[in-house]
Length: 451
Ligand SMILES: *[C@@H]1O[C@H](CO)[C@@H](O)[C@H](O)[C@H]1NC(C)=O
Ligand SMILES: *[C@@H]1O[C@H](CO)[C@@H](O)[C@H](O)[C@H]1NC(C)=O
Ligand SMILES: *[C@@H]1O[C@H](CO)[C@@H](O)[C@H](O)[C@H]1NC(C)=O
Ligand SMILES: *[C@@H]1O[C@H](CO)[C@@H](O)[C@H](O)[C@H]1NC(C)=O
Ligand SMILES: *[C@@H]1O[C@H](CO)[C@@H](O)[C@H](O)[C@H]1NC(C)=O
Image 1 (cartoon, rainbow, N blue to C red):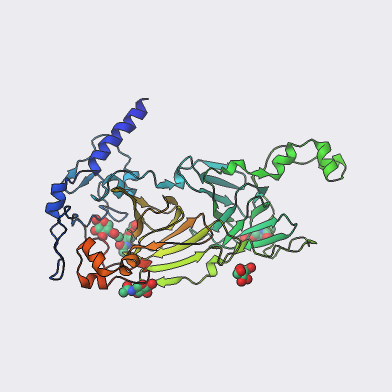
Image 2 (cartoon, rainbow, N blue to C red):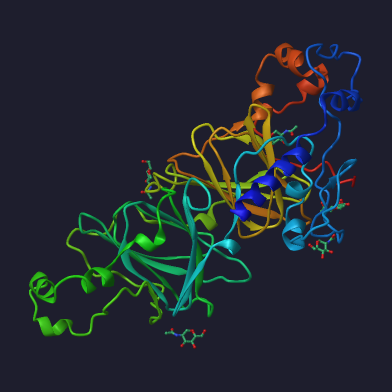
């Protein structure tokens, strides 16, 4: 009860920090400095927006004491403070003055997910208990270790991670409902996908002494990786006489089966070129793996994009992904996704994202490698590289096809006079809007002039 009250009180105080900038301040700060002779008169109906650039106030390279202070707003924390978390979240502790209200939680670090340790590896997950939308699972298998033969009700999509020089690979096996089988070795940066209910296994090869690590996505946010259906678990809970009858075998042949599930266990590394037993029904025709790492990225002014969805990875009808790099000072442009929530995963670098929810509600979050983001369908957002190294992240959607709407393209392709009457921009500014999506827009040479 005491804790709950403290949280509520904090939230009220926090609200009073983020919401000031009374209208009178906004209008006095908002003298248009860039107006040109051909600009229309300012709108008479509402005050102008503030000209404050609202940069993040600190980052990895600064050593300042993080405090809830921005300009004349706020005051330092006198009570206890988790400084490490505050350092990572400048836009939560000292939000841009453009933030207002709360959009719900849009950040979950895998560091806060309870981890399950097994002999041969570990697993941790984020699902609706932490944030809405998809379930994300991060799993590590030591060389040769096996995530045992199993199946589940939802589809499974995976991205093999290549972080900290880990260049391992994962061997997958599957058999479909028609008795067609599949075996493939999936390298770092590549994908796999199993349709719902298709039995499969995952095993680290010996390609790296460290084994393998990967990200699994399940399109259903209520999915729990503890609730999968495992070979050993089923047999441990089936009368032995039924097992013997099923396999038309002597019951004593089944003396050594495990009495409970294995889940992850050490194993003998498979050869990379392993072939499955020959099936009378043949092999699965549409591959369950996809060499995403071999896809040539599209270059934009500020970075690169690669997309894998059902148009190229045919079997992946429930998950679409974009892998994006953003150079220092550049930004994934302001956009939204018209028909799907976004589940994001940060691989390298530092980012800030503001979610715009409509009704004057906007909230900014900062992300580090290993963090998950969540952006509801239709919410406007950008992804800005706030670090001094390349930012790399995944945008993942519960969808057959990747789709986005670009703010700049929308305005470029709308009658200019109409745009001008909304935003009081000069004709020359409007004429420069890109009619093609910029996607990753280049930095303007400076990342942050300081405040
Ligand atoms: C980049 O940031 C790291 C810390 O995140 C710092 O050690 C390094 O000096 C920075 N490099 C430059 C060129 O600013
Ligand atoms: C795995 O690789 C190591 C060298 O990295 C080697 O010593 C070992 O014999 C290999 N094991 C198998 C089963 O291939
Ligand atoms: C994926 O689908 C397209 C269009 O139907 C087809 O041309 C292509 O061969 C398929 N790719 C694979 C690997 O099955
Ligand atoms: C417009 O966007 C395209 C990418 O779609 C990019 O190649 C081009 O450089 C952009 N033009 C300008 C002026 O930024
Ligand atoms: C980090 O923050 C400092 C202080 O605000 C700023 O001068 C610097 O440009 C920032 N660095 C990056 C990479 O944004």
